Image 1 (cartoon, protein in one colour):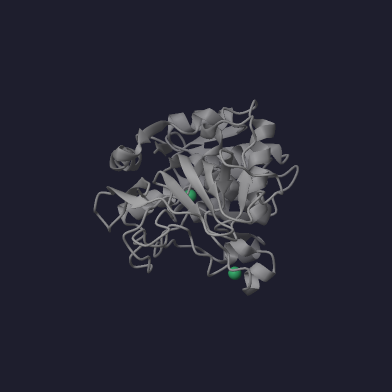
Image 2 (cartoon, helix red, strand yellow; image 1 turned 90 degrees about the vertical axis):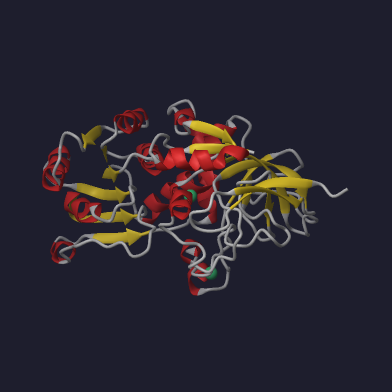
Length: 369
Ligand SMILES: [Zn+2]
Ligand SMILES: [Zn+2]
């Protein structure tokens, strides 16, 4: 009898995900079949579910299994796979994390070593689940990691809970801060203390930040930012106008302004405010706005006359994922990583999980299939 695995299947906008079963595939040479232990709901999943991003309009063949942020264990190794991408031996039962997209390796961006900017890096879940190998999104019992992947074994000293956000949120901020050239002794203001903002705070701390200022309006998130290394908090409920908040950042940075401001909240209207928070010569890291068609008004002379720049970053280089794991091992006793995931749900309750996260009842939920 063919073994089957369950999956939550997305059929289109506004439709609840359905639990369906598909045959569990045998990995082809170079592939890995992973048993999913935890699959998180990331902001981008929420955007797809809500319809801010219409997968069908982007050309994704539906139905599909969504989800990309996860940790799992090796269920079956395809021929030729003896080690992970760092050369560590890999065996059935080992815990692993993978990069959820496949840069082409031959376009101009890939050849220049900036493969996050590959225009043809297919994201795993942008494929139909009706055809083998079926399991290309992580809201399922299994995940099929195709050949030419990036995969790393998870160190024994880390829990599944800590590691589950590593292949998206954590790797993303590590790579983003590198791309914006954040360096030792600099100040940073972080707009938004969701998962990305919290990780960015701890990573900036470990990179030798001189001062970290976090801006948010939700008590719980601000508290978490403090626990992850923020020096100063700006509470949107107390400091209500963009002008006052920019002045506060200036005040907290010796009258100069931040060297780097990171937009990790996903609202375009915060961008002019963030640019105002920068000191002359500062760099603005734009990572949160992934929805198409949303705009903001800006005065470009601010960039020119004050020598400021904007760096947009999506996806990440393969090594950022290894750095994310190493960082977690190093810093696990320093920051409360277990507090980032707030609630877990079985696969059957995935629609409820999305509803609750969409209402803001939960910061980052996890599905345990
Ligand atoms: Zn490419
Ligand atoms: Zn994500």
